[in-house]
Length: 378
Image 1 (spheres, one colour):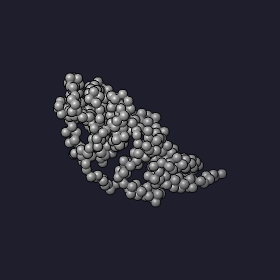
Image 2 (image 1 turned 45 degrees about the vertical axis):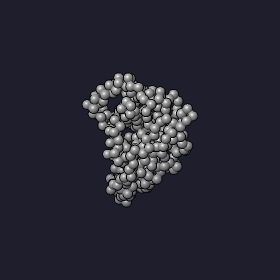
Image 3 (image 1 turned 135 degrees about the vertical axis):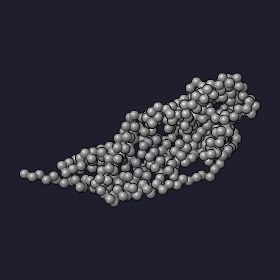
Image 4 (image 1 turned 180 degrees about the horizontal axis):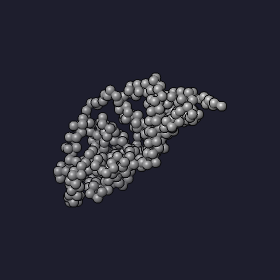
């Protein structure tokens, strides 16, 4: 969501006014507080859906949505801050009708689950939300698994209730990676990219709610004061048939054709460029692992496939450096074997298998080509 400086100024003015105004608002018995779960979309920012909070009171003419998914594209050094994990996200409010208009335009499903809370806790949650907005407490550092629009909604509700009423109730032995992987169906290169850039953290068993649709399912099982937290059926506010994207290039066929051509052509310059590219990506993974605050990028064993040492194939290529290319190829093959052992039971094994084969084939060819004695003229 792009928020301009002008819009932010207006937004802050509105929120300050809302905080002052809301301190004098006493919600009525007709107040409804609900969690809105927005379905997935085909844009990269919408692949996982969205979570928001709605507070509606016909008596006081309030019908507002609290959205923890806003950030400013105009932030200085936006890309570096996002990569490092220093980009500030924050909450904003929308009139309910405007919020629904956005999702109607995007043809995305919206579901509503009303929370069964006593009036005093509804009032407390309403006050807490507005205080957080005006004081800056709603500003947070985005973390893909640990801190996002879904976890922020859970946190403020649980804090208001004074207990972890909303927590993971569904039983599953799935890892974070296994849970995320299907969300990229029909988005091949996004699926490939996240498979290789995520490190070992996402291979842990999921122990908390971090995705909107997961929250929706767990809310059905959540309780508060020995009663169901959501006592009514989930209401469908918007329902659209899923649109399956199609692309002539963003698919597995282009991926296989590209790697297949590299193997079939087996040209020195192409092989060098390929190895240099793989090594450069590996250097990027190592850098992000140390630089970024996103723990999902740390301890990335995919660097065994994207071996930074492959960059040296440029430096050592030449008749007098055959032995170094031979040793480089053997060592890289050893790392590739270790990588296969690590990856064999991971959900993304098949998607990277063509690259494993390509690397292995080219490295074996490189080793065989340079496993020769260097002629010495006496």
